Length: 223
Image 1 (cartoon, one colour):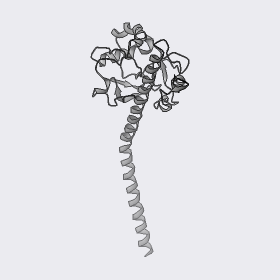
Image 2: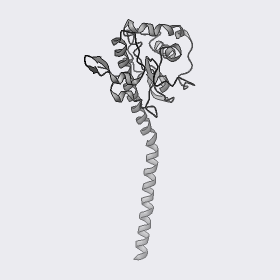
Image 3: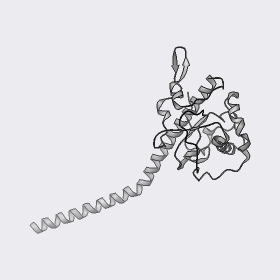
Image 4: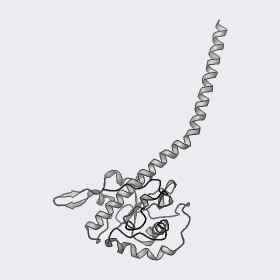
């Protein structure tokens, strides 16, 4: 009886180990798809937040009549004067980049080196037409990099070899992630986090980025 019981326990242990091995193989099989889905959700959230920052910049620039750009995320978080109070234009959560290790957005300056490449990609994505700015107040920030629109771009599949790591005390017209990784989804056809520039520029007439099937995560409307 004891021998039979030991044999049964041994067989049970072997069966349990076999089941655990099957589960382990199954987990390994689904792990890549789980990672992909998690990363995709992070990228969608990054686009949502970046678009909120772009909208906050638009409100800031229009409030000051085009004569002033924000110089830090704190300025956007503080809001705009509204009588004796402040009008909030940016939620605290949107000031955090979910793709960067420290959560800080890079500040994109209004110069050709910082935003010219993104303008070129938007132009290509839009069928060769660079969309207008949301109002003439933004034209002076865009005119200086028009000359780079006919230059050849490097591959979007390669991360930027270098870029400015400005986080404060610099006038900025947009933000971008510190992450250099290739993305799962695309933004204006761009497949690299570091090249997704969230800016109020190029938001006028022309094909709407939110209507194209190439954009897996369309930016939500900002109210």
